[in-house]
Length: 489
Image (tube, rainbow, N blue to C red; front, side, top):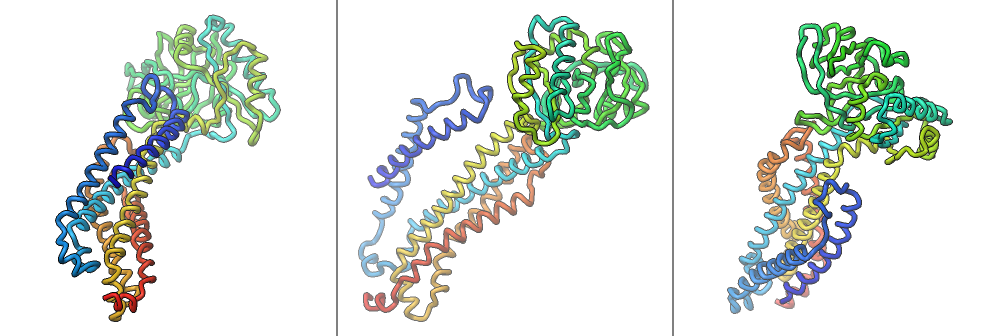
């Protein structure tokens, strides 16, 4: 009954905390990450929580009760408080539970640690451009007003000119997408060279000439796109180094030609790689994907209109230093070009990176929280085990100290029980982790499956927490009076 009352109180508290946590999670995670209609504390959650609570109270309440029924009352009265009671089967059961709890904690800590290391690796990848002091505005152009080339290019020219005139703006540009975002996948064919006739799906991005300057994407060779690359001139493109490596084998890339929609496109420059989400290839969530940059003035309008169904173009501004109020300034500048332009939002480039790694952030947050809770439960379990041993062996420890045992020796005698359980749980947990991390193979990037740094950090953290949890209860031994113990005996 005592166990049932405790469990009922725990379930009520869990539902309250769980509801608040779920509300916070729903605000942080986009709706497309959750099932249709979202997630809520409904009748199924209430029934599951009640069943889990009742099951736990019955299992963990009845086991000690059954164990107590097997106690020899006579020997207990004679040896009360001595080692015979301390080494009862109930204590051995507690040891087994602590070992299992620690083992599962090690698994969760290891998994969370590997995911944290992966997230750090992805966030520190060289981006291939300068994301500092760059703000992006997005707006939908899936509108009949921009279906013809003249109105489309007029909007791009007037809007970039208005943004460029903002005090503190260094450069402004427009691109179908920006780094850290998935680009338009389109088919291109190599027209000449040893790879002539090779055709594949690659990333295609239309840009205005100042796109590379606004993002400070370095030029490797050749030239960048220019204002005189118009619909009346030779079709040109700048490809990144990843495209040149995969499709052109770096052999005289500048001057080579591509075929797309029956149009011949001359490659005039090779730019540095920027990281983006992969297209049809599996692997890291952000990589250096082969990309073709074409002038917005030369992009076929049929393809432009199709792209605008799925993509919202980006207006990019680079400011001179940290410019507060740039969002309002950009909104006013865009309104000068088109007061009815449907702007969906303003984003710093660092925020765009966080959006690209949203799944990784969610995984780290969820598993990190579960691992922290497991570590807390393990420390409470170890503390409870050692504290219970101190209570059981108070008279024995008093006699030992009366016969010459030091306080430090008595503390070590009791605390090593919790440390031994921790050591056994740590060994079991590392063994289980070797199997558990294999499930994460597809989610780990830039970190080894059995990363020694992660395993070492997990072991050190758990050892430190276990040491504190095992030693703190033993300070009560200092309050034992050996003389009083001898008089009681």
